[in-house]
Amino acid sequence: MPESKVRKKAAYTPPSARGKVRKPNGPLFLPTMVGLLLLGLVWIVVFYVSQTQYPIPDIQYWNLGIGFGILLLGFAMATRWR
Image (cartoon, rainbow, N blue to C red; front, side, top):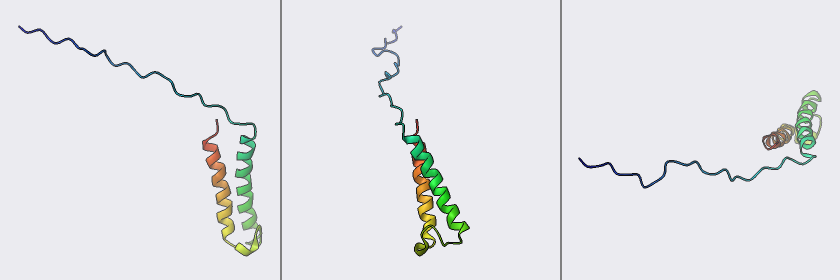
């Protein structure tokens, strides 16, 4: 009876953990993130409460775009927070 072949390769070995260590954020990262979130919220609230007169009266409903854009910057920073 023929013998089975011997494996030439070793069993599976997981790859070594050689990823780079991520540094924590700087001291101004959190206040900037929270500031952007609050500024965007206040921008939108002021726009609605003032019945489209403020913050910038000439651009009318583009104020919503600016407010949401500021909010999105805050949320983008929140995804990078460590």
